[in-house]
Image (cartoon, rainbow, N blue to C red):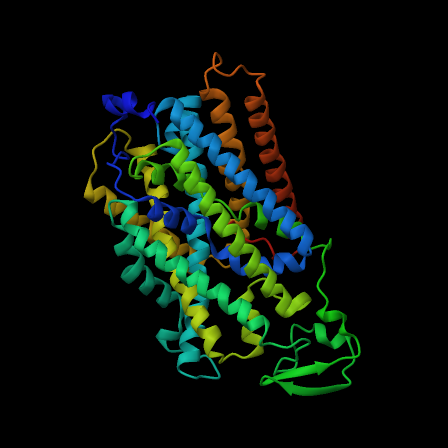
Length: 464
């Protein structure tokens, strides 16, 4: 966009977030796709079980389209003022309060996301080691302790990647991470045709739901124990479902495409940047993730139907704890979430720099110190917070609607000059409706979480 050229030469605009764009189109797609894809993919089969296939597809499509529109608003706003940092857009629209609101929302959202990834590391790595060592019971050795393992992973893998100066170099890590998730998806599809239905868990208490139907006979198929129940209804897919759990799946779906803080830094580092090119990158990334999300949810759901758990890998573990393919999938998912942490850490560090060190030159000491402090804080949260999902359910319900719906819309309304688009023009009315939708999402999500806490449930999960 030509708008960037005059602003780029101004002294005021050359702060530490500006790099010379070196990242290719393909690498940018990898980076943004990886920013979208979170640990939420593991819970989408459970979401489908509680919405039905048709309602799930409708919600997923709606959220994907809304995310694309939201990115369009962000890019249009940044094109007008020549700024490519989310917080600086907030500053241009509403001054210091706007900048602080954006920086705080980004920090909360991404600390929540990083904590959920490290929580997966803490809970899954001991299970992987247990399977590798072929142990029936968990031992008390240090290498079976999730707290030690999460610190080890943070220091040896996440910190070195987080210390890189530019996001573009993480494209290779993003590509590998996405490959791991593609492997997860292929395995879920393959297992659908391997695991028969209905299925009797080896221990005989598969989530307790099989006790409802009387067993007449059982036989063996593909090495699994199969239930020959008189009622085959347990293996019939539901196309439209509304139950008490549906309420929790809607916020999960709404936050499945949060990548907005990463859009502008990726735009900054794009080779030969233009608004059209960046919108194209966003649309490709969202489409790829949309297809992966839908297929993972569909085949995960069609494997276990109503017995699918909120974490899909745990459901497979109940079938056969020593399944080699599922062990490989576990390792792949762990690799993917571990490699995503540094990519999510970048906008948090930038937000902190915007709040505390704006206008200062790049400093390696500050760059390293912020990464170390952030990782230390997140590790302490993961180790000591007993109900981390409840805490970050609350954060996800407040920061994600701000980042996806409210901020892009109100920034656009304020930044777009009135002589170009009057307040009553169609684009601004649409943006105002979009912001209102965000407020409704926030109220709805918070209501579900507060009701859940009040009734003593524990289903509220973090975003992503």
